[in-house]
Image (cartoon, rainbow, N blue to C red; front, side, top):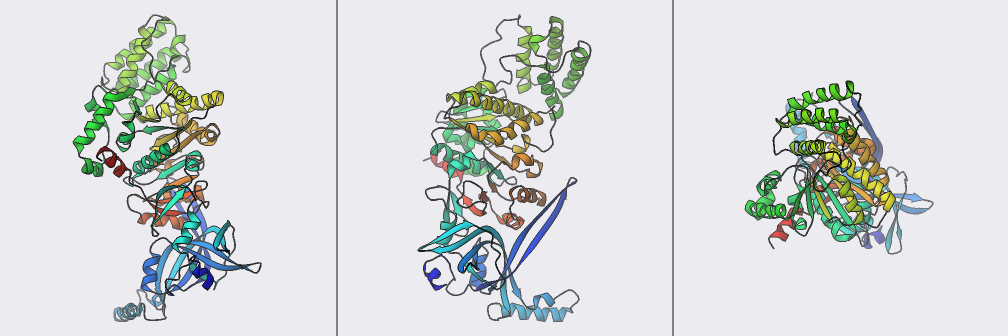
Length: 586
């Protein structure tokens, strides 16, 4: 023990940390939500430490302990992570509501006076296994995955800061934040963080877009062959990546933006960044982006569209409650009666395959709907293009070439797209349609052409793209299948995916399990925490501790990017807003 203490691997806090394993038990939790039930179970070690105020304060922060164990005559250290601390007095179990008030007060006064003075007080530590074991090897500590059962009464040792750094930090890796409680930068393999997909899960206000924006700028700086596509429904990333967009990147939108002021109004400006830079400065920079190239992303492909696409477009207007919903609903009924029932066309029929009478009838139908649609909406712009196509003589050009998801996919594969591309699509229907089409075309082109260009797709509000319940009419089935295919096959073709969401319980679990790295912040609903515990084989007690995290603090776990597989680490990540503020106001 003295040798290991001198080597700096363990910290007995000047002789104050004295602990032994009391027992190993198993916890089981079950919860239900919307008729679904989840059960998670995991082992939990209870370690008894001698009471000390200094030890108690230290243990309130994240810590790791090593429990001694003899293996084939050699000493090993079974690694555990502390998840809960409970100061205890031997008289506490005897106090209950049936005890008279005066006697109860006397007991509590005795207990209060005993802390730090009596042998009758101690600290119970709850700790979860990391599935790693260590042994002293020369001047170092050697770690390996192993599942040795520690024995009650065994000595428990507190890992020092240098030991934690050796245990968790990738040599030569990229810093992604400071470990809470240790003030040590955590380094990871950034290439693996990209390659094996990543998720960020946290409640509203946890800072998901701040986190993903910061990681994205680090990834782009590290890998010159990486190109990023951000699916942005909430309008957050133009501001979060404002400095990078000024350097020649691109914003595409499915909405009609007739002026810079419309674009500026559509973007979310964080209050903290506004306080740092001033709203006028940020709006000025966003206006510059608009003038420099906010480009319309068309949902019409060059080969014509089919009736199913038009029907889904109209259904999206009905379901979202937008202006023109009533006309769109009547239009769907007319479409079904006139073209499907009366004329025998199928939903897969392309407009180019309609006879003249059917084209004219569809044209009239869409013009009627267009009268009630806001002229600035994305639906109005799409209907105008379809009408123009139907009005044009057969074989005549319908206007200048437009950027479609398929065109963008080809640019990404050929390396002619900017390195950062933000797709601002506030309408989830459009966002799902674009995601499905872009991903499918990327996979197809990569299989055919295959090049060194790497593409990272970031799906913000991921519950919109991979919900657990899907239908055809709102494109959720289409986007779900595409994203799941990306997560399963993309790595072979240098296509990668990051996602962020607050609605974990609503995600496709099959897709969720394809993520090899993830960040978790505060999730108030127990069911959401249970979903993560179940999907990633993570002890629920660790996730419970995430409720204590503040803004910018995250629980990070990785199967590939971290030095040790699936060991939870609490982090304070870099504030992306401070980087933006520094770049725009040096």
